[in-house]
Image (cartoon, rainbow, N blue to C red; front, side):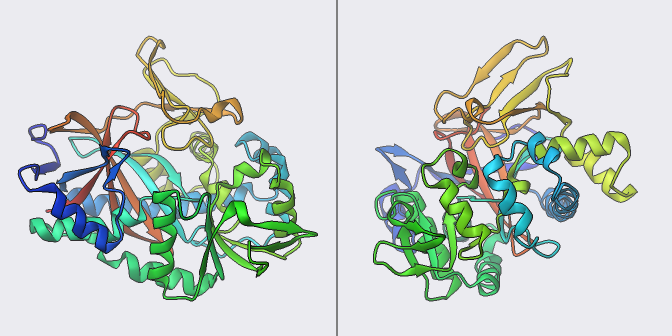
Length: 400
């Protein structure tokens, strides 16, 4: 069930036997449908109407250009690096490394949107550095939608992913706790498989760095690497400065590029909104897109109505706090790591998410849109509380 007059329909599949469907998804590569005894995957489909999907796709293309333009404005300006929370250890790396061509500062990214029941679309953030959810979107969602007879626009994700990786041609893919962290390990394995390239998967913790040369646990020199390793961690990790030096000196090339951290910072949203208010940088068409799809975002809590605060590098809901119309704290994330103790926060006008009624109760629906090799190409659904965090569920998103 879903709210009347919603742009979403909801198909509940809880009447189907879960175990054989989990087994089939496991064979396809989605091995964490259940996590720690809890149902991560909701066996259902949220179906977006076609008009809303087309608008979401067009909005993603427009915002991709707008945010790319903002990064090029910020690049080499240390006062703006500081404003959006970029750790100083990264500044020289960002200055010295060549800025990628337009549209591919990040070749593997995901927008997260609040799409309301009435179809209003508002961008919450851009995960341009280390987005997860690829397996759920590229493997699980098309299969679930096919079983339900619902169209999935996600079938082109593998093709775009292969094209992106052929451009970057990494020799290594890495994550923390490779082999034991089920989700991250499964994600880089799927990315490598879909790339069609001979890439070795390794644990970030097995890497060593000496005089800028990076080697894996077997002593093999790593030259080009894709890593599910948030670049802001270089500020606080023991080997962070050594990793930054390896990149600065050209001994290691990262994919996504180092400059994806500029796109990743939620402080960039405040820069874009500030430029919009001042009438700077953007043309009339871009200003219309900003007004339509970007939420008013500031570096200080200047709102008179309900707003949200979040760390510029908060992930999985960590650090998010929601304030009511009077400015009183209403709810805050209790599960994710509160990165606002390490990085500055931004303050953003509150947006409404569509709500679905499931066997788990009423849940808020977060809509993700992958952008791979510059192309919006895949929906990711997450359902949970008002703050989408670690305890939220994956739900397939299809299009009517």
